[in-house]
Amino acid sequence: MKYLVVAEETKTGFSAYSPDLAGKLSKNPSSRLTSQRGIVALLLILILFIGGMSMLFMAGGMGQTQRTEQAATTRALAQAKELVIAFAVTNTHAFLLAGSPPTLKNRSTPGGLPFPDRGRFDGHGDCISDYLTFDPTRHLLGKWPHLSERGCGTIPHPPHPPRWPPAFGTPLRDGSGAVLWYAVARHLVKSSEPGRDSQYSIINTETIAATPNNVWFSVFNEQGDKLTNRAAVVIMAPGPPLAGQNRIGSAPASTHFLEGITIANTTYTHHVIEDPDSGFVMRRSDDEFNDRLIYITIDELMTAVAIRVAGEMKKALDAYHVNQTPPQYPANRTGFKVAINNYIAGNQGNRAWLAANDWVAITTYERTNLNVATLRFADCQILFTLTPGQKIEHAPKSCK
Image 1 (cartoon, one colour):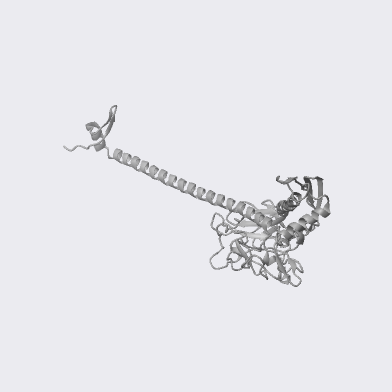
Image 2 (image 1 turned 45 degrees about the vertical axis):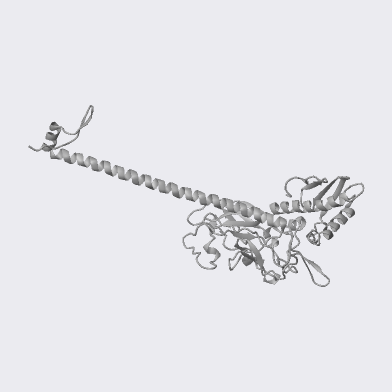
């Protein structure tokens, strides 16, 4: 007699053999089939569960990767903004005396910025030396320039050996590994007006205030609302390539990095600077548009520059103060100009940009008492208060 060995659930667990159950199953093949189908169903459920969890984990991993890339892009854009402002504030170290008799050339000045890296995409800013060749549609957009400018004409002197100083110094990439892109307003680069070949325009708060708004860039949100029409610099993270973009090669066109978008029948193009320019758009990324950007208004830039200039003037006035008996700040504007000129002469011309950019001419100086004086620049609301040996005070915090 053959027995079918099966497992039967009991109150104490499972028994390995049950003659009654074995008999039932051996006499009823359909019961065996039903049991087998139940087992298969359980296995299918288990397989689907494991597959679903795997897909969930994969999706979670992709989401985490995306968040990590976005965070890296946010950091890169913020760092880029800091570096641009820092460059504008410290762009004072490459003045050139040329000609006979020597004449000042505005090779470096607070507020002046480098050209973008165009054409070769080698990290160098690609300057132009001749105003007649200046083209705002071709010369104001390119990759992030972290090395020195090239093609700006005569090399500045000093330093030794003669060389253009580095641009922003630090190569920056977004979370996808793409180099950032940089657009700069024409009034802030060299050779942008007649008679200023290889030189900056005169940059101070008064000249900037007189510059028409169409020189600056406009930035819009994804609804087409204007966020500003006074952006001096726009820095963009191109993100990973989208469908149709091919970044292989030595210098792919800007359209392989940056996009255009149409909002409410208006087309905005990031990949070209138009004249007048259509503007830039800050919006969420998708499969057709993934540029992310940050911008610097000319008011932000010039506030930082004005603070730098006031700090430089304080050094001159503090030096004057300590050499008087009794110690005192200049009594009037005539004494103020003497203090500034002595400071420029004592720094081997490295502060000549103060005079060359007419900062002295646009400064209102007043002495409150022997140890307190105030400065104010034309078209800047900030009042700077100077006290020897103390940090300069300024209020309000912005020129505008």
